[in-house]
Length: 208
Ligand SMILES: [Zn+2]
Image (cartoon, rainbow, N blue to C red; front, side, top):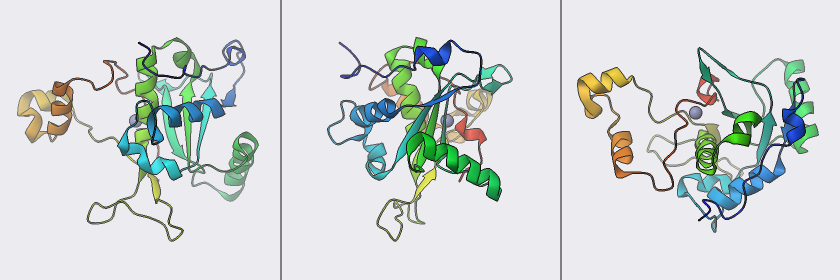
């Protein structure tokens, strides 16, 4: 049985066959992500992404390798516009408008080489990982925040857990505050068993 009901979108071959720097917007990828994870009738719907029904999201494929210290970065989530100097920001805004026709609430970027060869399950895990970064601010009581317009207050959300394996080994899941993660791992995957360990670049960006 196919993991997803709709065939997942693939990066265009042309983008992979050239050496020059390329970024290509993909409307299909966001349609697929909505149909698969976000929409009320999505095939692998996850309620954690509910607020994204009201978000605008843009997606890019790129052939530019990313990463450092032996770890490759294969996906990244950002707010539409970065905090930057006036002309730099305007230049980026111009580029984003040319790609998407608007400045989306979030922009997701994916490594085209990885996306071309990974399994469906790995691709789903990667896209959902980036969608999890597309968060909604919380108030002091942990309730989701909204803007005056009534729209969710979007913001980049960091990883739930960042810890050394050695600390968990020496002090245990409770002392290292990774109990929820350990319990989730023990329960086994709801969707599929995949590994995309630490392959996301979002956590290195300034959290908006
Ligand atoms: Zn991440």
